[in-house]
Structures are given as C-alpha cells and as structure tokens.
Length: 93
Image 1 (tube, rainbow, N blue to C red):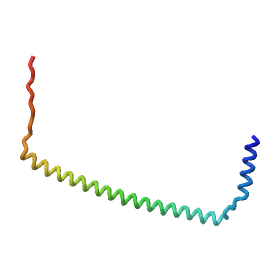
Image 2 (cartoon, rainbow, N blue to C red):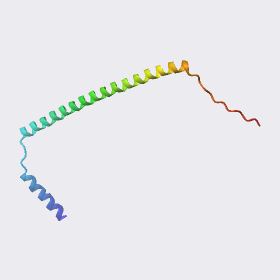
Image 3 (cartoon, one colour):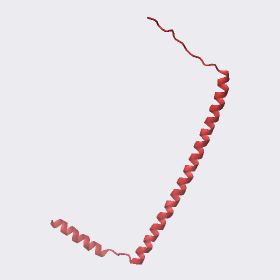
Image 4 (cartoon, helix red, strand yellow):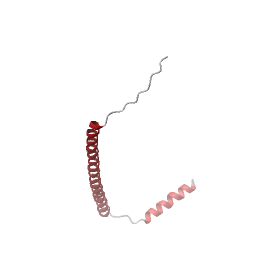
C-alpha cells in the first residue's frame, strides 16, 4: 500500500511541473487537429474514389474483351467444329 501511495504522490508532483496550455491555446490546437484530420480524410476519400473508379474501369474493359473474344470464338467454332461424343458399349447380364 505504501508503494501505491508513493506512486500517486510522485505522479501528482510531476503533474504540478507540467506547463499546461491556456484555454485559447488549447482551443486553437484542437481546431487545428480537427481541420488536419478532416483534410486528411478528404484526401484519403479522394484517393480511394479515384482508385476504385479506375479499377472498375479496368475490370469492365477486361470483361468486355473476354465477352467479345468468347462470342467470336463460339460463333466461328460452332459452325466449323462438330461435336464428338464417345460411346461405350453397355454390358448385358
């Protein structure tokens, strides 16, 4: 119990040595932190928006190319390539 009392007393003594900001300084710094946080949030939002739109565009282009390729492959190969079916004899008992 003595150690806890000494710790609390030491903490109180150290806090008395701290140079605390005035009310106007605290308000000014708080507003500064809020503004910087808001600006960084907007920058991150903007980067995320641009990145997601870019990725959506790239993925859409890839899908369109695949669809075009599949359409041209199936239309030309279906007319020229017959379907081969393997048959196996059925064993009768």
